[in-house]
Image (cartoon, rainbow, N blue to C red):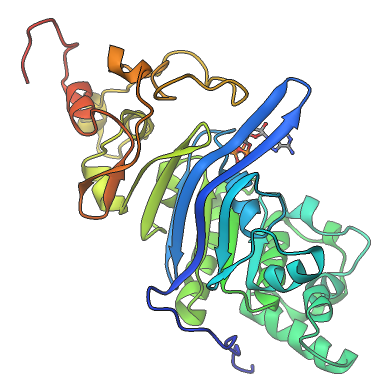
Length: 348
Ligand SMILES: Nc1ncnc2c1ncn2[C@@H]1O[C@H](COP(=O)(O)OP(=O)(O)OP(=O)(O)O)[C@@H](O)[C@H]1O
């Protein structure tokens, strides 16, 4: 197998591969303007996995799509490999989509059913003019199949002849074909059987280690990305509400929303599990057409106070590298962790 040729990289001091800076992605609809992403700033550094977590509809996929300019930013900036790609023309976007690749949740939907697996994997090689000649392309496709642990003969098959796990491996091979700086993994295991999920996670980890890949890993479940991520960002209603390392967030969540997400994760130890106190959030996520004034989470926050309706909190550092957007970051969560409901005048 030939070596995975690294794309010549432009060295930046901070090694930030991709960055969203105060990004808004708003969709005008009949019901009003959907503020899918509303003031999101994120930095993804070379070689890391950033886990982006939040409930359905929080804007995670839209933020990921913005990195490939598959949605158009309404405001703010998208930077990839040091270049501002926010307003790149359609023609230039081809180059961007080599630098940033995406693996989708449903590999069935993301592969053309009429094309062979080989043709699907070869497509990025042709579009980005990476390999000349059919024979050389066949060879590269075979190497990419090796990389993702699929037999070379599968190149001649069609997607419907493969299992879900195999199809997702093809999706990963396609993403690797352009030797991207960043791979956006949008719930890459959510549609797979449990046994296959672990295999795909192992594959993603191995590829990252061997090829030095950078991932934005999108998931709705904190437990799903915790082991894989170097840093986590928690999204709620179009905003990042907390960022930090998994250890920081797990040990001491600072935003009440994160605390609620964590409290929903079952614990293996039965004694701890019995003592575990779930924080049940009231109501549904409000509409992104008309998010609540002040803190967006206040309508569901068990610790909301009058001030929360007045001030829209920004991310503030609660520990080095650990930030939360809550006026009472840390305090509110400590109040939620007491085992008895708090009473007036109670202390903890
Ligand atoms: N093209 C679009 N037009 C209108 N609204 C959209 C569009 N794309 C997304 N939205 C809305 O934007 C919000 C965020 O959607 P998005 O898919 O980014 O969330 P998500 O956190 O990735 O959720 P899921 O896990 O369900 O994919 C949702 O309210 C969604 O309905």
